[in-house]
Image 1 (tube, one colour):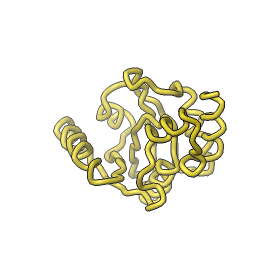
Image 2 (tube, helix red, strand yellow):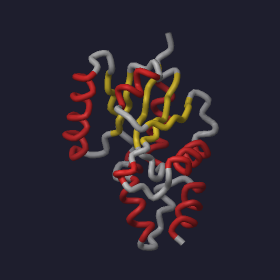
Image 3 (spheres, one colour):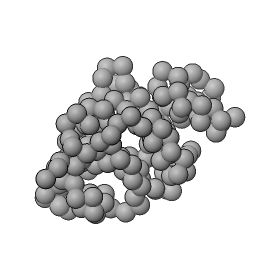
Image 4 (spheres, one colour):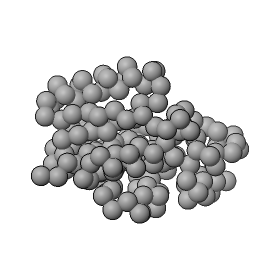
Length: 159
């Protein structure tokens, strides 16, 4: 039985920090499903199809990675994928409390699903999609935070 992990998020946009965790997870699990949340309440810059295309572009060389979109409860999505693991990134101590609450809630909803926390490399430690969007909206240089293909689309979207 293969070990399948789900890496959920909005990926609006996908960052170098996300890619760092995807690459790390791909070394641990047989398959990593990047689960793009279609939650319009988050008011994303990119629609779900654009986010899926961008994630697809920047992960094209990773054979064990697949991309899916979902718009329901994460544990239900995890079950449908026959997965047992959820990957979550921890950048700072401030992330821990929120992520711990999510992991605890998910465990209560399904005790067979484990949350695995990964930390990004130091160069990506403070990178977040919301930070990237804010810097980009004000004309700042986000080229060190996102892959080149994402930079092109950010510039196009915000032009």
